[in-house]
Image (spheres, rainbow, N blue to C red):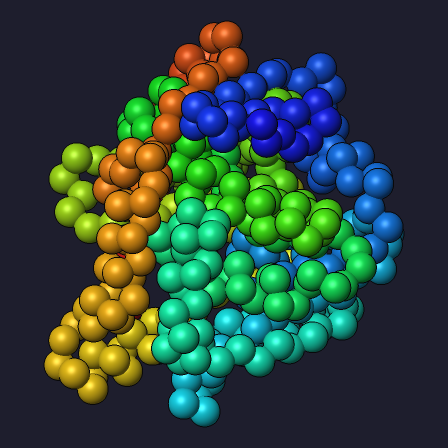
Length: 346
């Protein structure tokens, strides 16, 4: 059984793949950042894995509110001597400087990682089919296994999305599914447990009340900034709520740097391999497909659309219906505009 938070909002049974998610309306109007600070009173010093994306930026800003020593670490991905994630590294430098936090750069040979099949090794060991997650797990193990302190990582965000898929959560609630937990979070937690690393990840899932407040932030953003996300059947490419996530983070604790688009850090090497072979998805053929094949063959979990799935039990009473009604009213009454972004692999 995996749980986190006090009182825990999430309980994941690793034997049955059942994820229980509790949402509860709070009896106070404290800002979310105060709730988060209360959750992490045990933390004495923090190491933040800072990719430069909005999720890890948020984790860093929260860590800096704890009044404890904070140090950030970012990886510099190398491929035949070239830096392939220069934009991410620069953003990490800017946000670390803005927060007055020391930034440690860890140089990682991505080509060697793939050539020596470490993506297969970490994929098997931590049940992930994502080369990016496998590489990040490798970075964490290499960097933090002997470093004292609590490791802060970014994570997912409970949010409201009009007409959200049932797989994402009840009614218009999104981000509350078993996929993100089993495909990413559980692997990080297993690795950190192995090395006795105190891990803080998915900060906005730590209590039932924090989940509720995060969801309600989407309603406030529709009212005050006239921005929301809405799923439509006619969408033919992947959509990503990057702008809404950024607005939620900024509402909780401002000061982030918006990198404009969602990045995996692998875009440059994907372009390089495509340009050398003439095959658009050469990266996927070489590294992602074999990892997916091994995962699908070896794992008992069902797979749907590339995401590990499982059963979810929601303990929320009528809150999904109440939140959905209020969310749609906020959209209609304030002429809110959909800010979904298209996500392309390059």
